[in-house]
Length: 423
Image 1 (cartoon, rainbow, N blue to C red):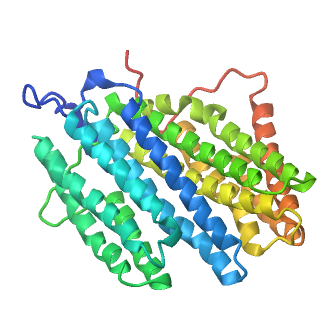
Image 2: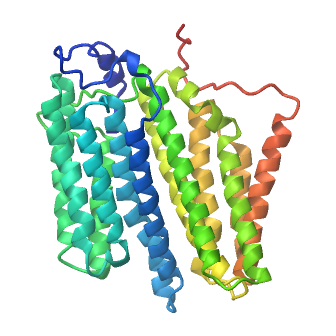
Image 3: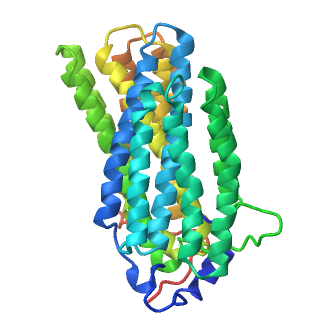
């Protein structure tokens, strides 16, 4: 789970070894590790889910009516955020609990199956098989905290999972109500439901009469594990982007324009990777480890990566349109995906730079301003030209990064209120 409050970090340090003998469910200081094979298996299911979202959105972007094209962009939020929230809560569970325990393994595998089931419903999510998307989500988000209450002996942890189960039960009402209606009514109810989930988590699931003391998965012994998981999440999203681009090109008649679109799309993906890993991605675990308030740093890290994944999904959808319609007149919704995807990605990258270096990146802000400035002239061109314009902005940002780093030693992380390094 994403837990709030610096008090959880302090409390967590004093409770690491309070599990009864023979019941080592909560991971301890010696478990500072990278993702295991079970977690990587779960990530494979996420690839399928993100691919399903992109395919669903592209179908709407390619529609004949402007209303449906714009609706496709809204669907990105309503479909991606629940899937990402399941991935995030699962990663916090496997960081907080020992994934070698059978009970935790079963929980992760059931979550993977639930995400697979949700992803299979994506083409029909707002008109027919809405129950196949909402019901697994509700069962997992309500059921897992209830099971976790029985796995722990610490009252603070039990209170945390009890509060989260209560709030997930509250959001279950609009989730399930949405399955009884269709089209925009379902979209509205599900948007309300995921908003409840995210906002309640942001405030550590407040419940009158229950303590809001929390136990955080971002405590010092776990920072590298969760930071690694978020880095893997970004690689998964970028990999899905390459997968979608390659499949679309394979299924499209080959021409000079479609081949150029493939090249532009691939280089764009490489630049997104480069912009992420230029120092920030390289030193993220160390930065979170050094942060004075690791819980807040961890929360901001999670939000930044979710924004970047949203941007990558938009980029992937936009470039499928570019490959299949390179010479058509660009539609406003297509332009919003082609330019808006990189812009959303950069916003997330700005948030991550605040975590790692405690600064606001001027180069990223200039990049966003440039994307906004070129939107109007690119609106009178073709999808291929618009995509090339977005690539040029990202390339300029990457070159500016290279120029800034030339002749200087690698920059060390400098998070806000950094703690002394542990020896």
